[in-house]
Image (tube, rainbow, N blue to C red):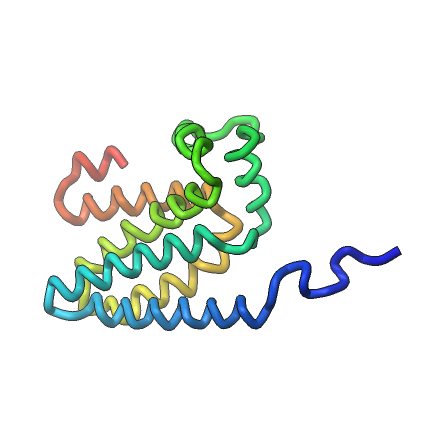
Length: 172
């Protein structure tokens, strides 16, 4: 009897994974540096680039993460959790009609967008804030999807709060 996990080919090519991971981190360092520019147009381009790259990279992630199968089944077969959050139920209802990876891209978008908006407000430190955030979050994002959806909403609220838009901040 053979072990189904006996070869590395079952989990994908490790060299390709680490090459993509290295490129991803390098690009995020460049984007952090670009956000720190005083030129608003240039800084905005790096903000958009970092949001898109993070969303796509974390959305299409080779079935990595302990809970990936669970969230995949939520999107394709219906929610398995007993008491899911209302916002999560809404997200699953909306994205169940699309290919499943679109929802994962959206989850990444919900997390990175408020972070980039906050970092842009304090752009002098962006060259270290964005790469540090990416290093801290990327390994755990794969396992705590719903928690990071909630974190994204919290960070949106925090962003509006520091912008002195208290009503919008409280809504989030």
